[in-house]
Image (cartoon, rainbow, N blue to C red):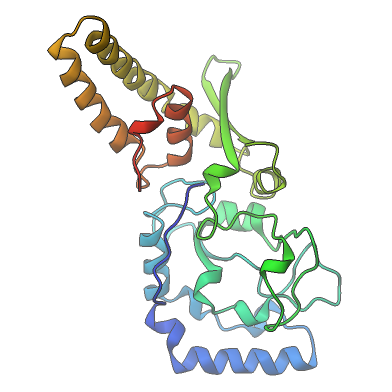
Length: 268
């Protein structure tokens, strides 16, 4: 996961009269009973909303950071679940009032959303039960990448190989934080092929780190102009390799930080 910069203006659909009507309908239902998923009209899935989220996230899933097609094998994820909340008590009616709210929506791959995130939303305190309750007071244990920087909570371990000798990269909590542990476990950030997929880029990153170290040595120890040119070229490559547009940018950045080359990573 990496930091996501959310546009301040919501897509037109979310500001439309049909969404206002849908929200009013849900409000009426919530006053009588717990809304079910089928009670919501899925306006969050319309093209302008999906496109805005997809582009905002550099065409990647908000959780696993794999590149994803806009319309194939993808979902619109509700950060706070609109209906059922797995960790809340039975009386909780879900975050129905946030169903069409721009800050609560993300672009996700179907595997992450339906296979792991589902209706989970663990908190340290009490779940908010209505629109007048403070969301901040909940103490959410899942990282919101538009509010927090996931790189403050998540790091990576690439010291393990599989039985065939292939590199594996695992997400590990940074500083043993509750947010790091919960996000890793709930979102399944080490499940399936993710460790292997991340591992496939290690050789490229190692070669680039080696090129940078060679350039630094040449410049510092030999006062060689070629070292300066090599550093300049390698620095540009590191910036490109760690761009937010790249798959697994979080791991890429952590890799170079741990090589003491963090000053060269992309600032986006």
